Length: 267
Image (cartoon, rainbow, N blue to C red; front, top):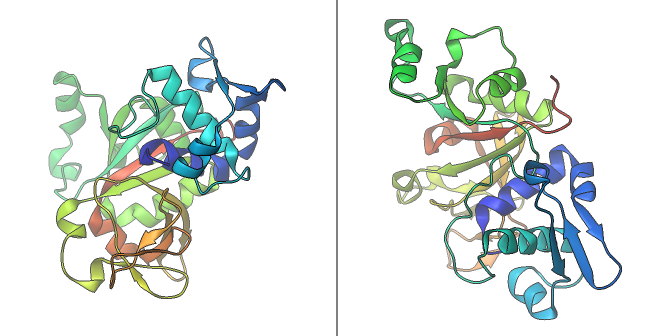
């Protein structure tokens, strides 16, 4: 698929709230589908079924997993942007779930440490909807995101594993991207590892789905929406798109996490 942000969010939704996918798509049994996005229920999109060309060009072909292509085609119709080369999809957050969302910024500069307790006040004065998570330590992540919809939450990078575990447990969408300066470093510590133990490249300017966190092994597993990865030794595509890395490496390489509630997230 050509748009990583939409596809990364879709993959996360399929894991966190699979019934939402089923509810979004209606087969009209006349060669068309109607897609109703929960975040914009007043503007359902009716599209023709993906063509053979669309399936072979923008997916791995065949009819299996066609739901992602149907939703993507409906989204492209909604924004008036057909399949083909294009920039990042706008207005993804909240569209697939109709729920609240926030960007969790990993705060390496310590803006939220006790010396900067005025940050929340300063951000509000500047018109930014931001909050320091350690100023609200007793609020669970789903509720914190609900209170800070479409805003930024500044988090302690040391808590990234705890945050991932909390978000996954509470059926939230989690996607992320990687800093260019980190992915381009010629060092294997910045590579990921596929299921065969081979090193694969990590792409910057690209969205990934966070699929798992292992608190025992201290590893994070992600999925590349391409459905494959680039081998770190040779410029070839291989594997199934899943990649694992130590949580310390993950923490260092990301700017933050885009998290979003689903209908299964607790109130």
